[in-house]
Image 1 (cartoon, helix red, strand yellow):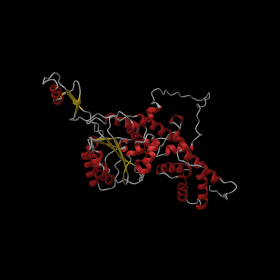
Image 2: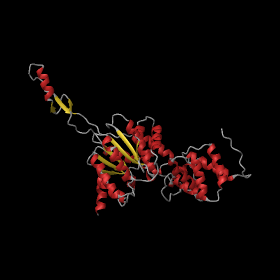
Image 3: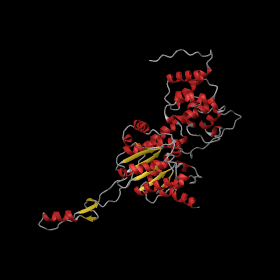
Image 4: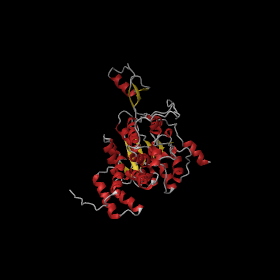
Length: 418
C-alpha cells in the first residue's frame, strides 16, 4: 500500500480544511470520493499552488472527477463553494420555499440544486418553525389545493432535480409501461368465431368424413408485434435527459407483456453505439454502467446526421423489421449540413412504421424551430413531443399506439411555413 509522507502545511491549515469540506460536499452530491482522493487533492494543490483560479479549478477537477457525468455537479459545487461570494444566499433561495421569505430570483442551472443540497446538508431546520411572538402576525396558508410531492415531481424538469428527486423519479419511471397494439397481419390462427373461413382446414376435415362438410373452420388474424428502436442523444446538452430516458428504457426492455417483439437501443453523440445487450441485464445500475462504458462519447459533441447515416447503413435492415416504431431522443442542435441531415431523416422515416421525436426543448413555452437542424428534421417525423419529465414519459405511453397523434408537429410546421 502506498504511504503518504507528512505535508508541510501552516500551523492553521484553513485551505486543507476547506478542501476537505469541499470533497465532503461532492460526496454528498453523488461523486465517489474517499479520504485518499482528499489527500491527493491537498498534495496536488500544494504542488500547483492556488494563486490562479483556473489552475486551482482544474487541479481539483483532476483529483475528484473521473466520469463525464460528474463534470456538471463538480462545476456547480465549485462555483457555489469557491467562486461565488454570495453562495449561501443562492443556495438558501434554491432550497427554501418562498413562503418563508426567500424568493428564488432565477431558475436553477444544471446540477445546481444538487450542489446546493450537498453544501447545505444539515444547515436547514427539519423541525417546525418557531412560534410567532405576541406582536407578530401569524399568516395561515391553506395548502389543501397544492400539488402533492409526487405530482410536483411528475412535472419537474429532469435537469433541475436534486439527487433525492432524481432517485424518486427513477423509481417512478421504473413503474411505467409502454404498451403497444399489435400490427394487423395477413397470417391467421385458428379461432372458434374468427372473421375468416379457413377453407384448407375445413376441406381436410371433410375428407376424413367422406367428403361431408359438417363444421366450418374459422380464422382470426395472428397478432404481430413491432420492434421498438430507440436512438438516444448523449451529447453534453442531453446528458441528464438521456440517463433518465435510458433508465425508463431499461424498465421497458425487461417488462413482460407489453407487446414489443424486441427493444433495440442506440446512443449517439459523435458516433453511434449499440447498447441493446446491456439493457437486457436485470440490474438497472449494472446495465446503465455497462452502457456508459460502451458509449465513449458521453457529454461530447453532436453529429446527428453522421450518426443517422451510420444507423441507416449498418443497422436499419437488421432491426427495422416487423413494422418498427422509432423513438428519436435529441434536442436537434446539430452543426452539420442540414441537407444531409434531412436526407437521412427522410430515409429513417420511410423505414419506420412510426417515427416519434422527443425533444426536451419543448419544455419552453416560446420554443420555435429556428435552429437549422430542428428545421431540417421536423418535416420527417410523425409526432413531435416533449421529453423532459416523468409526465412527458407518461404522455408518450398513452399516445405511442395512436397513429393520429402528431404532438406539436403541426403547430411548429405552421411556424416554419410562416
